[in-house]
Image (cartoon, rainbow, N blue to C red):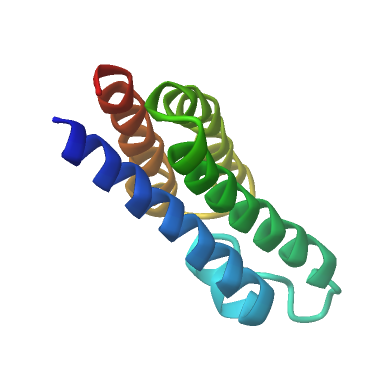
Length: 123
């Protein structure tokens, strides 16, 4: 169980780093994949950069907690971080995104993050 808990947590943290990278270096395609495309006529660059910084930071903090503080600290972090994809679900729904993206990507991610937290608490 411990190997599964750590593996899932590391994969989620690495995925956050990937998302952060993508929003920083490929912001418009990343926004489209998020479910709410950036307005081509507007200047959404700052918001996309904020999202990239947020996601990347969450990934780094998660990896640091796993490496230096252990499973319990990482579990509490995952429990709190689950609010981010839940919020993303609402953002997509409120801004014209599809239910498939809102629930199939963001809500599903929240569920996986909560499962990761549970596994880490058991580790």
